[in-house]
Length: 294
Image (cartoon, rainbow, N blue to C red; front, side, top):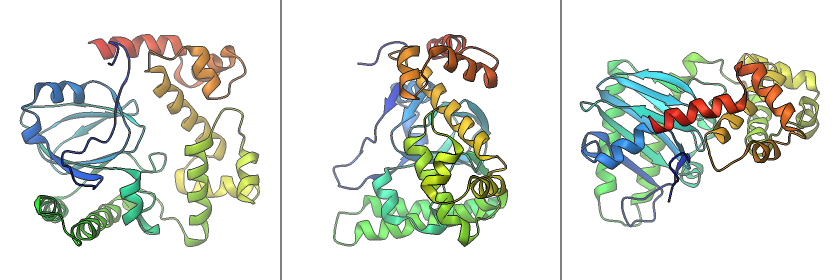
């Protein structure tokens, strides 16, 4: 049972008995469920990836403490472990594609492997009407396949259709970022993997450069080119988001958070956090708790 002030974690919950870690939720139908409505408006951490595609209606969606307005044609990307909440309106019509890392790995290509790189791309993408119509057709094809009885071909067809949808979205997504050159792609993707899975306060730029067998200067050149951040800035921003997510969990003390991200002293954690947020972790935690209960 979740405590009143504890951050809700939502695992992937299959709506069918099939062994397929992919599903499409029709928000228009689900908004009639009061409990579902409340859970979406309360900050929560997803334990899977999701893509929300808005067909009509306006509102706001908060992802990792940034608020994005949505309207017809908005696409919202939420990666596993990000903290999110909707401000819904009853007239919203959208589809939410939910899928696990395992399912994504079964369809992914190098060209779309960075779709959920929230340090490189904004979480929100706006489609024009023509592109939205094409995406909507793909969603309808996926929905039809999901409704069919299971056989030897169903999973492969769904994977193929989903890959097509991701490539269409990637075509639009790269318009707001510098395309990664082939010679840099392997290094960048490896760096991204290392940061997401290992980064703590004690790890420095030179530690990642050594692991990647390149110089710190080369790593910073690549990061600056594709994310507009130095490696140090990238690591600080990533760590800050990680700390904020932990602070929303009332079950963790500040000492426990400091231990998880490798600060030797709580005072150093406080200094680091206040340098960027202008408030202490406790002040941020208190403000977030008020938001959870409002």
